[in-house]
Amino acid sequence: MMMLLACQSKETKKVEVTSKTFIMDAEKQQLDTIILGEKDTAIIVKDRLDTADTGGKKQRYEINIMFSNKKWPTLKFSEAIGADLYMVGDIDGDDKPELLLRPEWFSSCWASINLFSLKEGAWKLIRKGSMYFCADEYPLSKRIEKQNDKYYLLVDTLADDQFVIQKKEIKF
Image (spheres, rainbow, N blue to C red):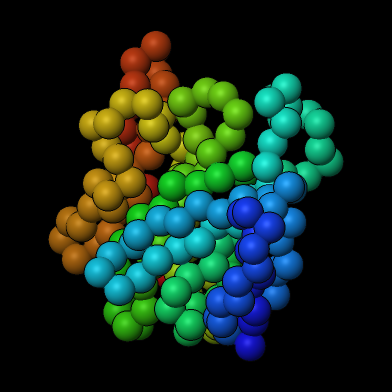
């Protein structure tokens, strides 16, 4: 069992979830909440940042993502100061959802795009690529494509100063 203690205004509240325990310091950490669907919510625990920090003040930048679904474990992701998430749904036929994560960083419109799947009680990275998220043509919700009973992750690259969308087959 996990207890999450969060202090925004020096008030402590207990929230029961079944993964890792976090004790939050409102001066050093903050929460982001992302609605993943009608029933599911993600809570991102991230460090508060100094306004002068551009990515070199700390040895490690890491986020922890907890879920309202108590059957889902915490997902720890390094080299991020926040995240955008999209619940893909079950694409591998195991009755468990897959999750797309685009980490936030200090600058740049380029980011990694990461497909995770619940395997043996943990989030496993299945496929990774790059995306240019400042262009909304392919937001996270449009980054998985099905073609002839196969799934593909749409990733972005540059070729001859042009954006190119590539399809990378997803294999579980």
